[in-house]
Image 1 (cartoon, rainbow, N blue to C red):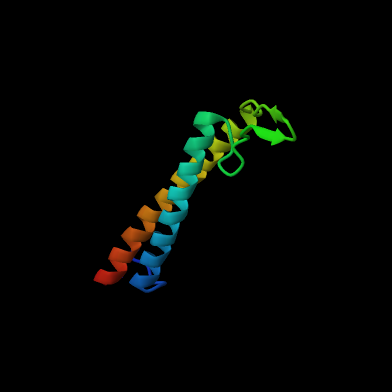
Image 2 (tube, rainbow, N blue to C red; image 1 turned 90 degrees about the vertical axis):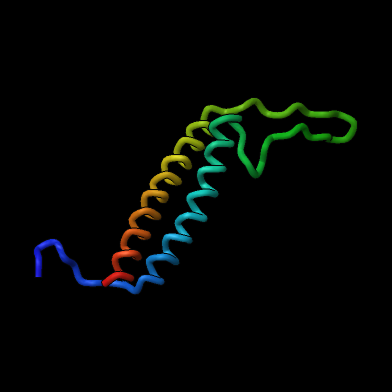
Length: 97
């Protein structure tokens, strides 16, 4: 046995399911992060104009905090993409051996 060989901890299917889940979450976080970084507005509450009675209240200005949060979402999303790559590699190795 070589020093770099490791025991198989999971089945290949487990690695591929984990990779698929990480990919779905990563795509969602990257989409939300890109939207918030670009616009400075949240994706679920875009701060559109609101009508109260006869008056139309203007939308809130874009916030720097939303842009920073968007960068955070992007960071976590790309980190999960790295997890996808690692899980796919481990799944292939588990399927071979």
